[in-house]
Length: 115
Length: 111
View 1: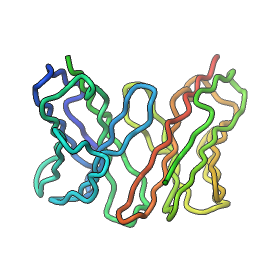
View 2: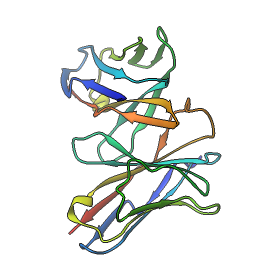
View 3: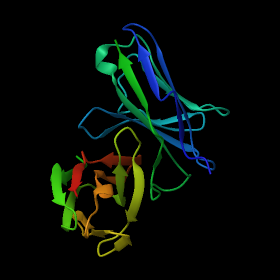
View 4: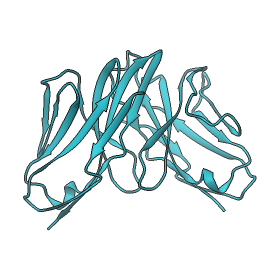
């Protein structure tokens, strides 16, 4: 009964390096959402994807950030040329196909630290 | 603009001291309202879904209610293990389905 799986749990990168965060949704779920959380703050929407399609990327910075959800394999959130301000917890959530009535189910996040 | 506001930001209770957390929302096209619990270092854990005004859901010491403008999470006789951050989220239909989160209420229950 695997839930949403994210890896790595912790990731340390130096400024200018690339960070790749992975998310495998729950079985039967084809919708993936990525959120970012800073300490003492709420979850900020970044991007919503279905298999092979980006549905809404309105919360994602235009530069350095990209996301994909290929036909096979996990969803990937990629941050190029990381800066200290990218340090945060990144959460992935999944939901079944539907009409927005279903709750999102979350992984335990990837904590990115940029040194 | 769609918005979700939670209050209070933080709450300290003695064990057994009942209270309520508030989630007020201003959205168009509400599809559902969701409550989550988040423990430090973990992802949010789903608790309840509410769809229409007047609806109530209950689980152990927690009870969630919904009106047209707000939702309450009532905690009856809390225990220290109920200490966590409680998040409220709404899903709205605006072109695509968005899930908007409040900033949460940090609850601490003292033994």
